[in-house]
Image 1 (tube, rainbow, N blue to C red):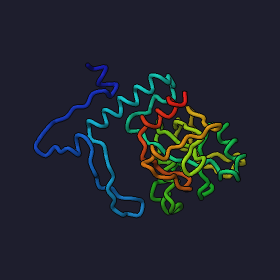
Image 2: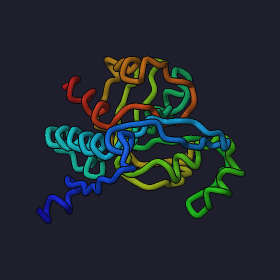
Image 3: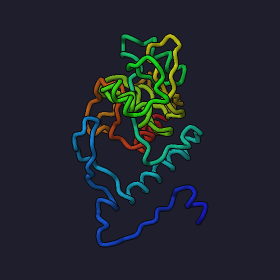
Image 4: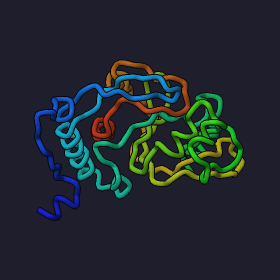
Length: 220
């Protein structure tokens, strides 16, 4: 029992009259976007979070990759562009070989010690704050190939870092590539709620970590 508790495979729930379906299974929850607008996102409840954790753990057992140690059912999946497709293939190849993802937003200096408020003032797009603060070790990244397909899947293995090595995209994270689809890009249109990806360099996809890992399993 104590070992399962430490592994996070147990959830303690106190039922009461106010405990709703939305809290236990799934439901709409209000959230605020970067511009202060209210939106309603579908959020998993306790039961669904536990089920997603189980799905992810099952996938991790089959892969046996240390990089996935911090990946859970609550880990996020991000769409990332490595350079401009068909224009900056040299950038893509260098970052791929360095095991890094990167964005090129201003400022041209490290933001490691900056507060989120200062970052917001310097980068209205919100991508720098996402890379530095919202992205977590264990999250998964899908590398853009086309509006429907991806060519790499990686797992984030480091905090934010700033690298000045001649590549103009200096704000970075280290990753470990766990899926390479360069020869046969994977179509994620259906997985992504039948939506095409946008050209934005970095944003969260509404795809679960378990479903993302299944792409690698299917490819194998």
